[in-house]
Length: 245
Image (cartoon, rainbow, N blue to C red; front, side, top):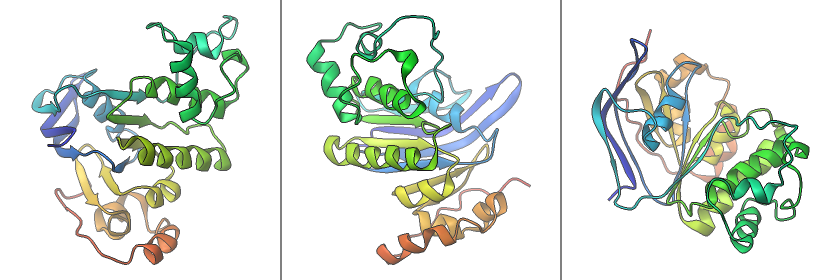
């Protein structure tokens, strides 16, 4: 069975419909990216998946014993608070030194355990948040705009690390991102969201879908030239809804 499924999920927040009629499956070993304009419900979808938001209709089905790792958009830590990376990773659940070291190594920042959190660069901070999620030994790893604020090389390095994690851990990975050129080529499947699922499928097919182009234009098509060269097989795109006007 799938790691996690959403069946006709709707979410209403503050009197407004944020998500409607969302049906999706997420499986082990695939990288799925969710794209959409601001306010399209991307973060709400992830928070619904982890159980922080309750659907107003439909249901979320999780595999028995499912372990989820979650990297939020941002996390504020008081810069005057003295706290090492290792100490941060041991809150609120105490972790052994070997466990912390292994998670930092998996996140690509093995040497940061004794560094003060307040002295981390943006990229280092995001890698530490990734290590924190990896401590859960996740079956499903959720990344909500995890590269926000990073420069292009930093983002590329982070996505490379994510690909390595997929290969070594075999977990499912779901990313929310606005970096269309990068994630379209780094994903197995793309979900275009705008309150509902506008389009879903392989990156090259989604980039050509009318629903996607209505939201983002045609500018990302050229970025997929390499992808198309390396992946010559075609796939169907599930046009489940008409794009919002």
